[in-house]
Image (cartoon, rainbow over all chains, first blue to last red; front, side, top):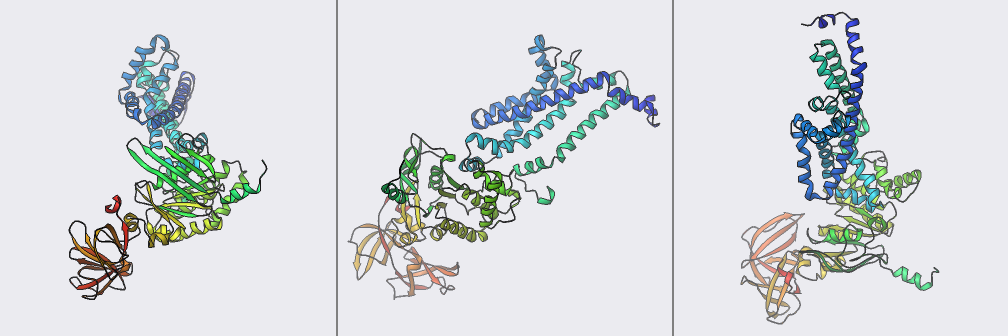
Length: 240
Length: 370
């Protein structure tokens, strides 16, 4: 057993310093980078997925093909996707955050598309017709009726992609450059270097972030109610 | 423009809804076939027919959800749709109530009802107070802040009705409004719809597959058969003078026979039922021998009498209690005639009885056997 773990029993400098190290220097930079990558990938996947779902919904013919194509990067091993990106883009993008971001988006795109496609599939055309009969132009009907139905699903897409991308290791470890280490890569490096305390601290940090995001989403009351009603689940008043 | 006396006179006689030659056809399928329909201001019209008869399409065409492939649709005298042009639904000032309510789950009950005023730029406070007023009218005061998903089917349809009335539509269109509502709540909702339409002198079209519903709520009934109007008349006329066998059958005449007239003796028509099934006698207007007609006898116009005293004898096949009266099925040489008798069934299977049919004679049509 590593001596570091024995010291955990005594409250004191070892643990604190591990956290200090975990939240400073390269590590905090990497965390920031990962959060940025995961956040932007989540936003792009949620919004882009909704847009793709809308297009697919309107032209049902391409729906099957598009869905299958978008599932592919998710179904393949991350390493395959990463190498594909290197083969295609490394001449221009090697060592940039952009290549990692693109790989995340490609890999997780299916989450955004499928979620929104599910919402649209369950959305009755009559809801839109009711808006039109109530004096809403097609655009207005979309903003007032379709969009609010999509929003909760998009929050879900964002959350899932954010959490998956935040600790994504396989693709990141193949795509990172000297300036673009992600948090998961740092955790792996610390573990590799035998720094058990630092590894543990880094892991705790990413776990804590995950928990905070998850609990935050679960507690977001309005969206939960909308989510439930969009899914057709009756939520008794006292539970909302 | 200055309004002249003639203009005003014209306006007062302007039809609320006018369809002329309206056809909706797809490549291999005709949904509506040259529909002509004129509905006056404040009329309540029921559109009945089996599923696939085109009744929903007729309503959707008026709303602007479907465009005619031929013909002209006018609402309040204004042309809203032809094969070439169509006014979008949002510019037609209609109220539409859907079978499955179609309330927006992310809005409160009040927001749902206020929405038609929101799209027309009425201020938040003003539209909220108008919505509350409507909700009180449909008996849902106190439900303003609720989510529609927490309401029962009947309550949801009341909200939908209130929303249909919001925005002050010139016509109200209801597509099977009672079909998704519990049977126990149907009557009161139907009464509510009629009361509100009357009170506002609001031209109302309701589709239903239930002829009883149509008969009780409407001033006039459109009977649709495979995309064509079989008859457009008051409930009484439909009952007394069905235009053809289809309408007669739809209106609950269970005894409809395609026959050839053999003889007419003392007010009794002797007929040979098609397909060599046998003969049947009915009291009806005179027809010359040899003509092919449709003989219709409503079950309530069939009297069951002791054997030998009727125009013909038969054997009771079945006698059951339905809706508080007994339905008796009598076989006259293989031809089944149904009769309604008040009270509990008095007959037993195998009883020999006499039958007197009060019939109506209708011309033969292609639709006679449908």
